[in-house]
Length: 387
Picture (tube, rainbow, N blue to C red):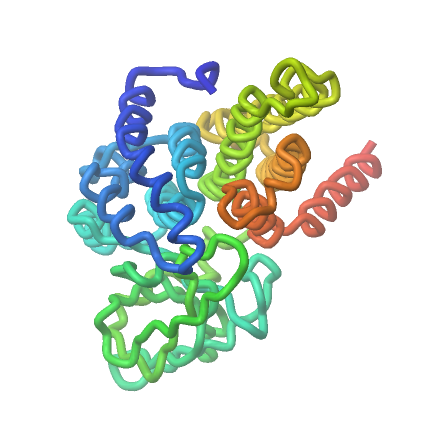
């Protein structure tokens, strides 16, 4: 990890996070077992200024890059994955919004001021009938113009961070415009409520509940994005979504560290030393660290390319490929760590069983593996035809 720390600012931010390491790690098991949202952890992050870290300096934030964010998010995930993935969505939405600058100036300044005060924002786009918005389905949520207001009705699923969100960026189908609109909705609007439905075996503390919208009325200025605007024409690159694989890489690192400590300390009476002296255990440790090296170099090289505007346009499928490679590597790493620890790794009081469940969730975060491989294949076919 030290190889990827490039400057003093990164070191300072990592230092702030490590001050919370013990506190966050100690809560992780309870968060998982009870399926509770880590409200205190999020409050601590807000107080340290973490939630405005991807807000540009011109708007009063810290102005961290994608690369910077990944360093921090990977570290945070090694403490508690639910906290990291939850807050990662806020960081990535803020980073992407201000990079694209597709809102009006007034709306940009409004959300910047709110984030500076501790407000949290996330997109609400997934629905039961359409699944992930990355699949291209039309939302069942609708927005109808009534006089000078929009009336929005629908139900969103997987609304991560919902217990503490200040703003929901909601997608809805606008029939009269024949496109998808995105509305900035405050949590206190009449007709807007969160229904606690999140009950999974993985990342149980992310608060990814359902968002219910029952005839929510908003003014025209709260329609902040339309999919027929130039931003939505052609392929879009969003490097901020790399917070997803960074989270799973952090889980893998935590699993590796636990297994290595166990290997150095566990001394069966059939051996003269710890199991770390056994060749097959050393082989597993070597495979784990090699997977970590490969995954980390891939992830951070793609992030570095994305942050460089002169190189960003040359990226094709690397963002999706990085997510695919890193999340699958993380699953492999946790599996090998459990092989080192053995039967104890599936005991309820062992963190490895939590890492095992949490890391599997990466397969279901966008972009999905099949979509990524399909895009890579199509690119290769088109390139071959062009020769």
